[in-house]
Amino acid sequence: MAGDFRDHVFPLDHPRLAAYRSCDPRSYVDEMRQVPAVDEALSGWTELFEKTRFKGVTTDGYVRPGLFELGPDEAAPTGAAVAAAEALIRSLSPQEREATVHPLDSRVWRAWMNPEFYLNRFGIRLEEVDRAVRNRVFDLADASLSPTGARTVRDVMHVNKFLGELVGLPRILNENSYNLNLFGTPSASEPWGWNLWGHHLALNCLFVGGRQVFTPVFFGAEPNRVDRGERAGLTLFGEQERAGLALAQSLTDEQAGRAVLYRHKRDPAMPPGRLHPGDELHLGGAFQDNREIPLEGIPATGLDGMQRRRLLEIVQLFLAYQPDGPRAARMRAVRRHLDETYFCWIGGRGHDDPFYYRIQSPVVLVEFDHHAGIFLANPEPEKFHTHTLVRTPNGNDYGVELVRRATGGAGLLDGPE
Image 1 (cartoon, rainbow, N blue to C red):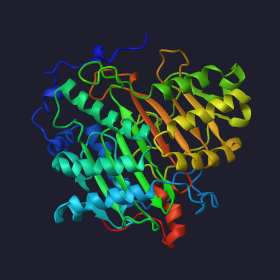
Image 2 (cartoon, one colour; image 1 turned 45 degrees about the horizontal axis):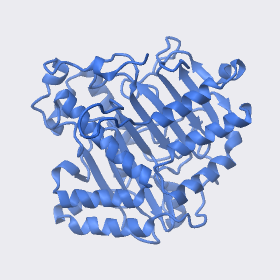
Image 3 (tube, rainbow, N blue to C red; image 1 turned 180 degrees about the vertical axis):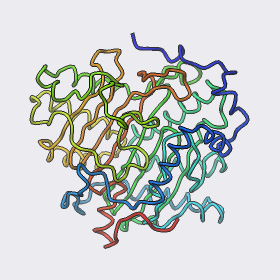
Image 4 (tube, rainbow, N blue to C red; image 1 turned 180 degrees about the horizontal axis):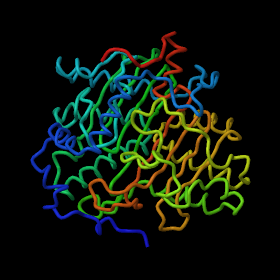
């Protein structure tokens, strides 16, 4: 039987928790940097942010041209998002506005991170502004997301609050531990966008007229279930977990021989560096905008008809946060490139086994990963700590390729803060 997170809760006087009880989000970073492994991870991420320009996730270091065009109107909710963004800007003080509104090509797009560390301090932090401003932030998110996406954002934030209460660190982990930034000038026709990010959440949304690009996106939870309080019974990412496992369990021995890269979540046969102390097995996380991720596993051409439909259903689940029109456009692109799509798996295929899987094509990358404890005590991956990711490979994360086509800009995301 899969583990219960309650079996892995640190005592409140444990050094992992008690040492940081007096910290606020800023001092917590300073204290945690005294841990060599944490300092090494943060330094590596900082270097990637400060010393690279945007290119995009690729399979081999080369961006494949011709994949993304300024195509037909997708019925993106641009008008509602513009109205919400303008209302948000009006609600900000001059100082808040200066901190929040950046040039369209600002490198701040790439500053997002999903760990709890308040390292890149751009934009407004929800816990540091008044309720009226927070409400305007949620209005913008709601206007840009599908109803499912809006609920998922609130659910992730609530789980973060639940975790903070569970481990006695509510100043570090709460429902407002998130930052909001705006890029460009909200417009019904010209490119602009926003991002919102913090612990276990990152949203990057770009509008170009009636089109929308909504990646990179990160949703996660530790634990993935709330068992007490007003949201008792809330569970996150169960659909993606079950759908991925169903596809993996449907594989024949021959198919599994191609799709399953390693039979154990932390397999001793993995090469050095495959397991990351912060990212575990997922490859497209924070600051991985230019990562080379080779195609691995089994191509969709090696799956039968039912399995191919299951693969598409998984991608649809991962894109459920997007509004209907843009999501339909993304799925049309995914179907066009289905024969170039790969599915890979790491871990066992039993119901209680933790696992990782990835679906990767020229136009979409989705990842699902079970993790070891960070604020819980489990040293090995368990199914109650989950990370999920969506990216647009080949240079269109953050809508960069569409912005290039709309403006003629270089699209390096190295502009001023």
